[in-house]
Image 1: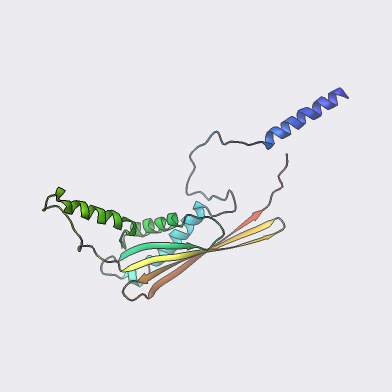
Image 2: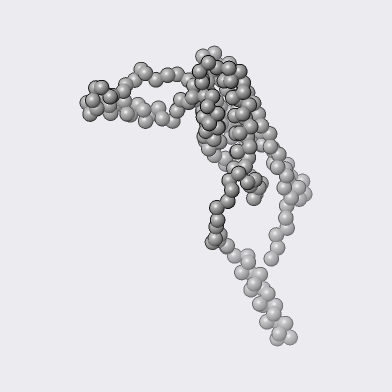
Length: 198
């Protein structure tokens, strides 16, 4: 009987030790292009799939593909209409990188405007030679802005769960405010709930 009690307590201790907090103590580099579905939330695999697909479609539109010179584009906001906290700036940064790598567009950096204004002020302070200083009035305006929206629908029945994402991008002509191109990419991911035990 004593032996049974000792074995029971030993098993109980092993079980409890697995219930406590655990830390990831050893890591290794992984391939960022490998599909990542560790959990049921938005992942870098989703971001790569949607940006590559949408940018490929956008640059093939005649407004960009047939332009005599690469149009000037400003990438702005992506609205997050999902229930998740998603870094939409990171998505739009990837859109800008993909567009830049296509060689078919040039960019206006919206975020750099305050920095540029500050540099103009410094260069006009008398600290910079007249031959090299720059000033306001020489910037060029954007031809298009790119913005969009990210939506999701989550469905869960029993042990089954699906997560659907739809991302829509718009290319809007700044002169006319007409949407020149719009495109969307859909992703649906399916998951099964796993029982968690000791």
